[in-house]
Length: 239
Image (cartoon, rainbow, N blue to C red; front, side, top):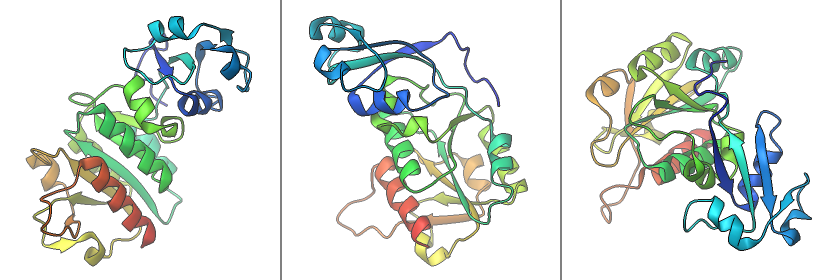
């Protein structure tokens, strides 16, 4: 396992679902757990009683905290080699790779879809991608505790390593000649998604074995990247 972040780094995470997922994860270090009394009584671990006004000062402005927050350390995450080893004995597996997806809300939502449809990991570049933070965790709604958010120093190298481990790389591109369903992908698949504006970078695109698209009607030009990820992951799971 690689340590992508020092264990001393921490942030406040709020919300009943997200905090409950944190408390259920034995790998997560919780420095402090605070809750208003009526919420604290429902938690599986003793919490420090706190007034709602004081709790609101601990979390980012505007956070819907639902009366509970936890100061958590960043998770130690595996690296791409760890994910490849995990998939070695599997006949089918999916890894999501995000190229230039910088919105933490989108990354969190994609983590949630990855958890829902059984993806092994979500891989992002070490630069130009959001760090693990309260927004990512809140948007993931507990999925960050279940699906690794893997940071790769070199995304192209990561794709090559996954290909060497038996994965086929499929890039989602609205201009692709075939739909994801028509491509009939099976086995171990890396699903690559680029940003809504620029899409995948050239070198990333060139490492794809397949370019596929979703069958979107002419009513809209494209889907939000997190919505596209959910639809694509569902299609791969269905196949």
